[in-house]
Length: 109
Image (cartoon, rainbow, N blue to C red; front, side, top):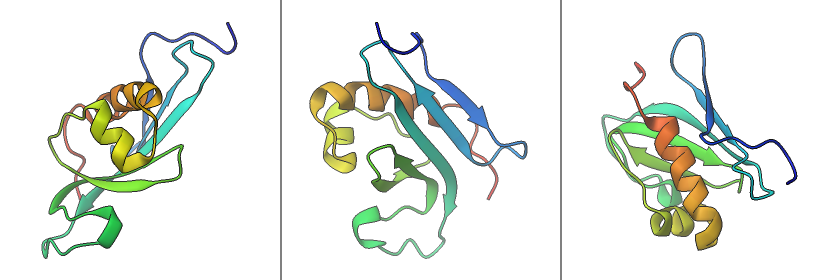
């Protein structure tokens, strides 16, 4: 099987606990990546295609698409596929990656 096999994504947190990078090669021949940066906008205005979130995360995936996600969220594959542009097969793995990426305490902003 190409690439290394990982049962769970590898999550790297910046030294100050803010930015998080996730990488996962689940063994299906694809490498999935995502990065999350803490987001805080007291105005909660709309950022067009990014969405509208008061406190949460700005997430960018390997598809090149970005979306604002609420602070405490559990993502399903259908939602990930729609927002980040993945087919349902890849969306399953990307949803698991992002869920693992956002687990734990919110980084201070």
